[in-house]
Length: 186
Image (cartoon, rainbow, N blue to C red; front, side, top):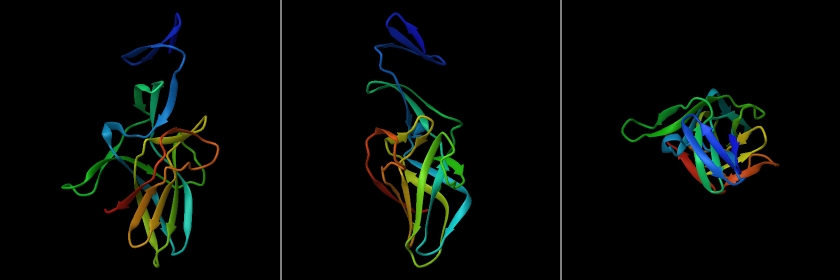
């Protein structure tokens, strides 16, 4: 970023944008590179949950950075290396953003998602991966970014709900809040 005679020059690689005015926002964004709509997180240590129990924690996940002036996005880039995977079968699967993570008691990375896993079924449930729809909302503090709270319900299958809700209190929000439910099929 360079200041020049009442304007700024934004430079990243070969991209240069002259900004007339004082408003520049650097905000977290969902990792939707190449237009993916889902994120799949494979747990380094699968979680077994007995009937009637619940567990919550944080997973380290990829995010993107959106550079904006007003409502106009002038640049967007990933933090870290981008990884993708096939979710489903070769014939009918979809490409998803992919990450590996371990369930932790606190948020440790730049990009995080808080997960609440609850078993309302009558038998044990095993969660080896979590697939959730990406929304256009993120929460952030000065040091970290968060996807909305994800609820995983075990009961004759696994339902995943991107609640759109903040994962904890005291965070700033960017984007529109809404809830999307998703049934993990594979």
